[in-house]
Length: 547
Image (cartoon, rainbow, N blue to C red):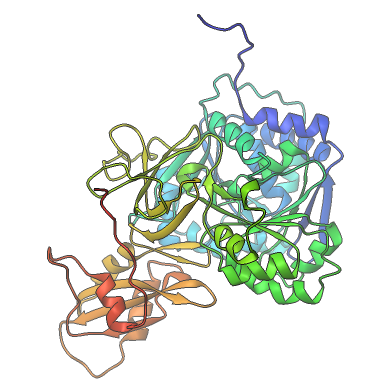
């Protein structure tokens, strides 16, 4: 027997309209390229979103079309991320840190015909534009000269909006309609598209706003120092709007971030550990001024226990570790202490906080051995983490799913090796996929090795991640030359890789060896390489088969 409850689609329209009707006076603050702060409220945001939805439709945008952005975190970027799904189209934030060659493939696959470009990113975009076919470019935060100097003049954003009517009614009938396209960082060598639905993002927003997850309230001021092109800014903008929290957008590299925290009274901020390590000294100096800050949401890579302690004990700022993937929209686990932990020592509490946490409501998780046996949650058995949830991908955009990505019974293979203890706390111990996590960004060793092997004098190559105090990990390349030489070919190889990859992907060091260690089945033994180059490096654990 079916129940008798109202049934209407769960869409982002509800989030936007709730923010307008219930929290219309709450504000969005944006640090502009010139350092000034732009501020307006959710009422104004709502009106401009409806104008923008009309403008996109007038320009020929149709439901289901992919509309790209090439931008930093700005109020205009938020407007676009709301207006495009509101109009039934698909928002596609491009990762400005990727190389033009990578981005061109992504744009072609997504069939982006309309791209919104931040003036601060215009120079980078010009290198991409040479490689793509794009019908329309809308430019915002740009100097007059930037548009005049373009080969193909763009549309000016404010004029684009002002000429449109703000009378627009969104008509999305199916909650499973696509709303966003986000690409992975290339864990299998090439980035893969993940197509979010209105339903998945709505449910992710509800789960993320649980007290033990983001825990946002109407009294919060949220600063997402994670870019919108990282899984829609970890979903923080939508979560903030639904909760009625104010939003503060800043350039993560800007010298005035701490000033902005003070001026706007930021209470919750989110970003990768390298950001918090860089900001710590100034925050410590201005401890009294930044007293509004009470919580950090940290993801991308593990935060060192010493850094957690510096924030929690020194600044009285709670640190909440998160783990997830683009495929998970992206939140999977969150680390908060239980009531049972209240009497533990500070050292024991910090040890728990350094873990990746427990599955958030709605996420199911299991630990599987190499032979596909489910492992116990005993804090000892190491296996691959597999997940499923209403906001986890079931496949990749325009790519056939393989057994390497998803199991036969529909679970996502994350590629992360971990332990899970009896309380449900997960600890990542290794990455089954060949990925280096540097400053919160993913670097594919597979992709780097493939391009290195294209170089004429390279006979064999391997790329590994080595510990780095500033970035967490950095790539190091080991190569075997077909002809011996006394010349240093490091710069030549850097230039070779630079044609395909962004600067931060390029290995810091190239080591020439006679032979690269192999396993018994002929695969590159990266653990042996680590032991050879860094004898004191602790060997990373493999799967532990459950007996």
